[in-house]
Length: 416
Image (cartoon, rainbow, N blue to C red; front, side, top):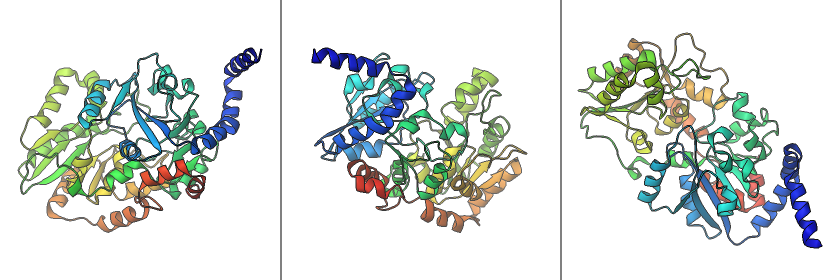
């Protein structure tokens, strides 16, 4: 009789409307799970990974592997719009990381039974249904953003997963306070721990492999264009259709003094083929990759940044990430566009420390300044690095996150 009552209760619980279930989850189920988790000897953690280029919790995963309280696992999940499973398989095998590749109908919880799931992306459409947080309610959720925060628009703040996470990690107290004013839950689950990508970007250059081609006596400049080139892109950032061909011309012009790296957003090529056609797109990409004075980069980029001398880009994530190098950086702008709309204060301050260009002459002036060492924004970038880009407390975001997971006292400290 008791068994039947329990089964009926479980079925009743599963049939609850989502709004009621998530209220129970946030206010009753989650606190009970947290209490139980912190009393466990071994905490199982799944990192749900769908794309290598934006996997920013690798350092946290490695630190958990060496920690006595954690049993971390890597799960390859499916991102329908960008199937990167083959690349992930290859990378995990090269690194010697054990992993489980989930089939389209396998849920994370039923297959791996984790206590915690770290999701790579907060958006439901990035996953097949079985791999979404909605279908994996038997775990606690944590979220590390895949790039440093910039937007204050609704799509970056009003996201169901972020609302139902146990812990969401922020770069610093400035950003945490910003999103407290924007989030429906006032970022009640937010912690100013810093992000693992900040630890990675603070790694000294001498500890990172140099991926550049031999370039004795040359400056090394990265060109990193964004993918938003089509009329249907809701966010219009890219200047590629007007400045992409000019960048290639300038790269050839200065090839005797500059070693170039072409680092486009992974989605640019496919979108460009719909506009230029495959043949013209292939010619453009091939020119960057088949000459001695340049190289094409599509994967991880820490070494590329660390061993460079400058960057030219129109990609939001690099606006703050490149400032970790301390090197000069230029942002390419659409004429008449207002880039600062919808950006948080931290990102606006980073953008102000970029040199800006809308024309060929602007870009060429920047190249010549890099060659001559003229850099009037250098002192401002150094101050920004020390003020905003070093994680609080321990100076190490991954250490802060692990501390917050294990201790309520530490968790409270990072809420301030």
